[in-house]
Image (tube, rainbow, N blue to C red; front, side, top):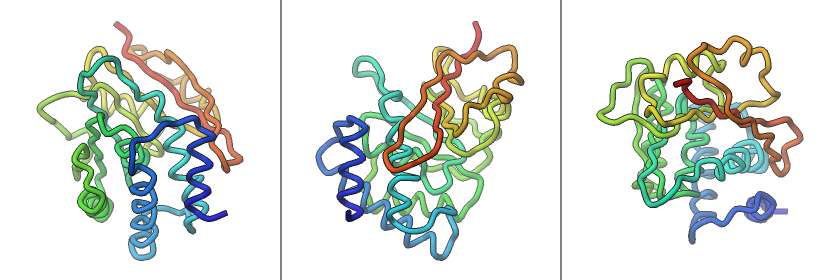
Length: 213
């Protein structure tokens, strides 16, 4: 099976309907990530085939949970975005989202800016810096991360960036029972979704967190 076939089959298995040209952009992103990874070590995953399952499909599995109601613009912050995961696949799959990618490592944000330019991702914004120091003009409806930190640190460092009616979406491997036990009192787990990622024989969970009113 080619990388293209692997991606197409995975998208079908996930039940996703992507915009026209999205698969081509995902493959172009994958090629760019693989190219930069040889020099800049953006991810420990090597090889296009493994990147399809471990990065693209893993990120795309969470896409349905980023849906919003109506035509209102949904602002998403991807914290510790690294090579752009899950933010870039999310921005490609859902062009109606406004996705901000933040990372404190300049070589990673240089890659993100290159990907934004080459893929024509007008709904992506790239920020270099520490998330706790980030002070944008508007706050975010959804804050997500894939490999940033434990849950307590994730919500604590980003609390000032979340809209009052917003929520966090934390992508995790095994169900993080111990991390949940140490959550601050001002946040609650409102949902937990077990994700099935095609080609990935590993436990994946999406934890939905909300501020306690």
